[in-house]
Image 1 (cartoon, rainbow, N blue to C red):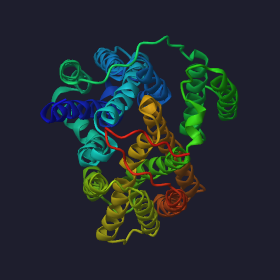
Image 2 (cartoon, rainbow, N blue to C red; image 1 turned 30 degrees about the vertical axis):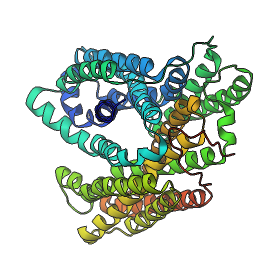
Image 3 (tube, rainbow, N blue to C red; image 1 turned 30 degrees about the horizontal axis):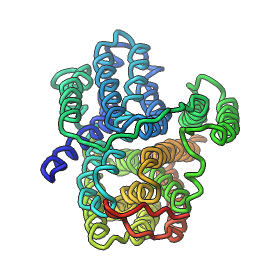
Amino acid sequence: MSPARLRAGFGVLLLAMLLAMLDNTVVGTAMPTVVAELGGLRELSWVVSAYTLTTAATTPIWGKLGDLYGRKAVHLVAIGIFTAASVACGLARDMTELIAFRAVQGVGAGGLTVGALSLIGVLVPPRDRGRYQGMMASVMAAGQIGGPLFGGVVTSLLGWRWTFYLNLPLGLTVLAATAVVLVVPPVPRRRVHLDLAGAFLLTVAITALLLFTSTAGQGGAPLPPGVLLGIAVLALALFVPAERRAREPVLPLNLFGHRNIVLTTAIIFVVGVVSFGTVTFVPLFQQTVQGASASGSGTLLLPMTGAVVVASQIAGRVSSRTGRYKLFPVLGTALLTAGCAVLATGRADTPVLVTSLALVLVGFGLGFATQMMTLIAQNTVPVEEIGVATANTTMFRTIGGAVGTSVFGALLTASTGAGRSVVSGVVEGETRIFLVAAVVGALGFAAACRIREVPLRQASEPVRVSA
């Protein structure tokens, strides 16, 4: 691909990622309107949970399918599923239909994200990928922070159904541009053996685990928490021997024989815990304790967003120029830990400036660490395993976010119970939440210090696999 065509293709892949990430957050602000029209207040949380569950559960399957059948072709299928399901969501007649279509939409979203990251991994050598890091970070920040704002504006002007309908022109544009612009190396023709047993068991394990973490102590789960946890453990226990026997395992266990894969998996889990926890519970603290409005608390997250973008630009440019990268996950996890420690000191009279500085520390930590984990994972494995390595990173970030949100929610609930005033309970809950987050960040720092730095390879260089 020529440089101009590569830039155009990169932009198309970023738009695909943005579609998937926006729909994970855009629905939140539309929910009151949805409930007013469709009813089903008790099923409200499942509109979001169904999307998240199927996205996480299908991510490793999409990654493996891309490695087997060609990443561009599989990515096009994912775009088609996502776009069609979006239209179906907009046409939903009741809450049950909306939840079902959101689940299908999440299936497509899993392929959108891992497909885009895998294609970037194939088209851009690790040594050159850093210059694109800032744009990728901007898209992730826009999806996470800008989604609720976008959803609110569209719902106010056009109605909640248009938060889904707008995906039709965007999805078709991405589909056509991907088909025309992207040129990727063909996958060698060979007989493929699908790992159906592994895919099924992994899907069951992830789904049961996320259901357990997202509903533990809150009710609403289809099965008791103990049963869900037991199903997850049993499915994982059966998954391991199934993968050892499979000719084409959906998640090759030898992937975790690489030291850097194990370490990046642990770090991206930490990143998921801290990032989801910060975005969820800092605005709650600011609104409940410090009296900020809903829009005002969202605005106060902007310093974190800006720090993510700046840090990603710095890390990307330096790693591209030098081929070195270990400094950034080490520095990033240290800043995450420091930022969480400062947030744990929050009180009603804590100046906004102090909170903003803490969020800047967290933002720089996320910017230095997040994109580097995908880069390190892709640089560790052979090209034919880029899909599964990318999917593994994406999946564990989602799982970390779900687990962190569940644990933090339980800490907050425990702090606000027993007849305590809401304000004092939230203050105590905030302290507990971010002390735990700081400890988790410190564990991530310990993992980052053990990363083995293998110079980022150029397109013409052989793959260096670190054990």
